[in-house]
Amino acid sequence: MVQFQVRQFVQQIAKTLAVGTLLAAGLAQAQTGPVKLMVGFPAGGGTDAIARILADKLKDQIGVSVVVDNKAGAGGQIAAQALKAAAPDGNTLFLSHDHTITILPLVVKNPGYDSNKDFVPVAGFATFVNGLAVSGGTPAKSMVEYVAWVQKQGAGLDTVGVPAPASVPEFLVKVIGQKYKLDLQAAPYRGSAPMMADMLGNQIHAGVGSMPDFYENQKAGKIRMVAVMGKTRQAALPDVPTFTELGLAGFEDLPFYGIFAPKGTPQATVDKLSNAVAKVVAMPDVRERLTAMGLTVGYMTPAQLASREQAYAKTWARIIAESGFKAQ
Image (cartoon, rainbow, N blue to C red; front, top):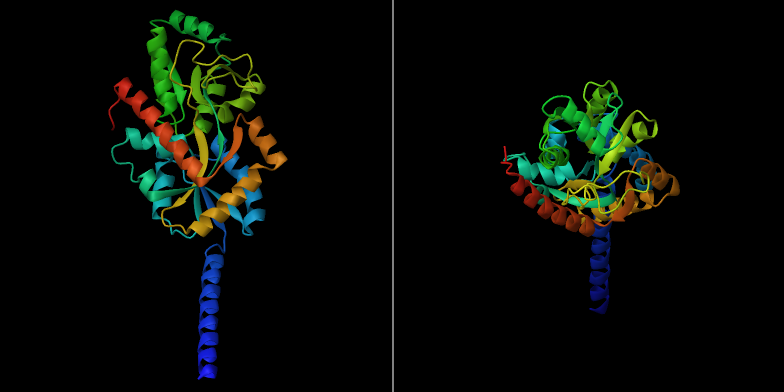
């Protein structure tokens, strides 16, 4: 009888171990790679460059190749919809900033996804600022000089490029116009790369975008940033005032970059990926490269990224409502 009970106990232990082995194998098989890191904007822009820096290092942390997949269009909506439809196995991720995750659901009636219901945060890794830059074809070296230059062109009319419609940059254009009594028209592009091309070609006189989009051409003297978001000036641009300093309050809460997975992705997979991102952004060479692009690098856990997004959404829901903008 005792031998029978012992045999039963041993068999039960064996079954439990077998189940555990199968579960572990299932988790391992969930990421056989390559992992697809989607970006909602064209190659050549700031977000694409950031994704390629991280992808190159992530492959060593998770043991499979990481491929950047540019699904450009509609301000990132196409990529976001693709993430929603992807299998929750950790093989498809989305690197995005605030526009697609937070702003689009506030300004588009049916974006085709709900960030809170369809995605799970994996890791945040940076914040950044948007700013106003003028092209080399204008003589302006400051916001005051730009305003004076626009007023001289006739009726205070000018076209200002923005990387996506109904974006934070577009709302900034509207507020700047109201503040200085200018007739500024936002010209939405399909990403920062084509906008920058037109700025460098003096097809447009100014643009509002992120420091990662502008910084290299700013350093090269091809464009001039004249104002930035945030509570304080940027260390990389100590001579450029904040919008708050210029009397445009409300733009102190900084946008963010994060990585997201489809809803239903196993927590173990999310944790593994999040830990990998933490290790990558802690690497001195990665931090140096991202900082040089105008990012403030700092790892955020999934919970911290979710909290950051919720606070940002609350701030911009108010700003958008006050602007009178109606969801399209």
